[in-house]
Image (cartoon, rainbow over all chains, first blue to last red; front, side):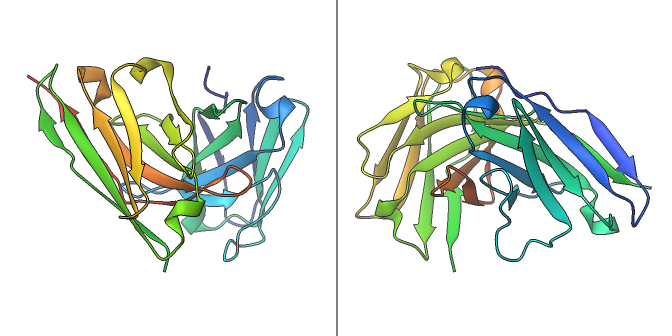
Length: 110
Length: 118
């Protein structure tokens, strides 16, 4: 199972919006609505930000939103804040107890 | 609160074995699938293994099949990863994570570092 494809980095100024894409195939993202997104600050464990494509866990700010079209999922951060600077990973279920993460995207707040 | 705490990491020579543990608390451990995910230094996340809530199903990423074994003891609320025939490329921080109803990973443990080096 190959990793999902994400851009290596994206950046934006405080208050702006950034969107991270996550491209898979019909065997993973395109086949299931089990897409989630994780935020990871340096030296820390990943944190769930979005699950089931577009649902936000309790405590996650509503400036984080998720969507999916075909085999590509997206995470949008609106109203970018300094604390949003981190690595972000997408994930998709790929069938028969197989799971795959994205390559990761570094978000820089300028 | 819901918590996962890994232990058992360390420095080991190639070809040797190591067993990781993940102690769960704050939730009904026996009701959830559990995963191991690893992250090599400076690299991304890689899913390693899954065990169903009752232990009846296990699966692994191809690179560890035949070398790693995931198991659980629901009476002790503990998840394990037995790693045999370790390779240099297995060097990583290993995280355990609980599987949610939509296959999401939440929460994660703090991770334990495994370094395979001669």
